[in-house]
Amino acid sequence: MDQGGPREVFYRTTQMALTCSNCPHRPVIQETTSHLTLDLERSTSSTVRQCLRAFFVPDSALDGFQCGGCDRVDTSTQSSSISTPPTILMVHLKRLAVGKKIRRQIEFNAELDLNAYFAIKRAPLLYELVGVTKRIGKHKDRHYIAVGTRYR
Image 1: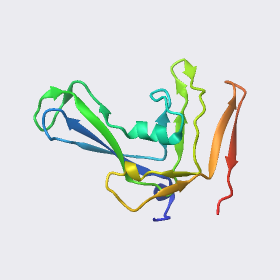
Image 2 (image 1 turned 120 degrees about the vertical axis):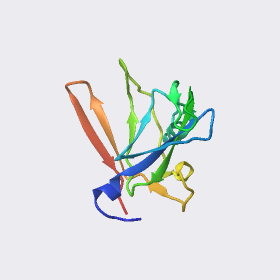
Image 3 (image 1 turned 90 degrees about the horizontal axis):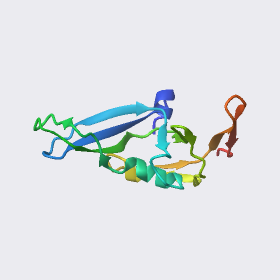
Image 4 (image 1 turned 90 degrees about the vertical axis):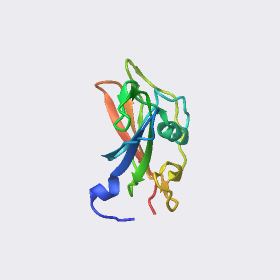
């Protein structure tokens, strides 16, 4: 994998496909971001792997979606996949919801396999956990701590 500048190292490209419920039209939107945000409010998952599975599962998208293929207004299905993986993957667990903080523990393994979420099947790609950051404290008196593993 290219070890180029920060964009090649930290950024990934995800594609989101909207599938019309009436015809085979399937527009694809590409999005480049530096991290993967897993929304804990939308999922009851207790592991990072389960959160990833929930993030990538196809879901009802837009009611009132106007298809560019058949021009009908109806519902669509949204599905996401990774088209270009980063060298270094940053995963953000979104714990804040409207008026509350989600406090349940989320387990994570030392290795993370994302092969099931690629748009095109490719050689296996495993990510190794090298660090975790955590926010502790309340509103004005908060601190961030980082815990790292020895990188080989």
